Image: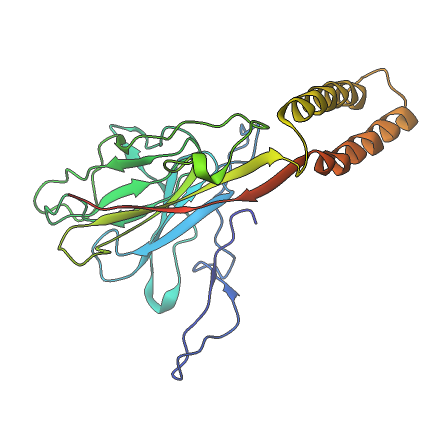
Length: 269
């Protein structure tokens, strides 16, 4: 869903109303605008909103991430409304961006100095931290560029074999939550990731698996080339699309594939 934010208003009995789209003071849905020079619409495809009083005025604001890896703030107004024009977060007069894409804002006083810092996951994996160095009397955070808090784990090539037993930490597409999980007075980090577990189908030897994988990959490359052949007729492209779909159906004959993710806990020392 590109750019829309929804809220479930709480009820006195502990339940919630149906999800409703958040509107600005103009009564239109909040959405990050894109400029006329944007080739790809990635900045207004939002990955996560975080509600926090960003500017210390008593109203909740929305700090939001997006596919591009930057951050915007919708300033809160009375009665649960927001300024429809978001502000791009910057550092040293440049857009504040994570290393990678899919910014994942979590706002908290990470270094216990009394102000709000910004943490984020990333498409690359790991956890990054932008320190707030606002001076006394400044209500809005002034952020440094992102630095690595938890380094990305080892990347896994698409289609490579991977078992759960081989995992030692988060991989890519990380999303985070910060809290004192073990009640020791220190902030810990929960890191979720996204990956594909892949092993040979039951009964196949390693040699049989490799042979079928190589053959399948060659067929896939040939089919992809046919799908993108500028000289192909509409009928030839349609036939290539059907072969492509059939290839993925037959892949389960020699591969056990599980697209999943895990949650990892980092306890602060």
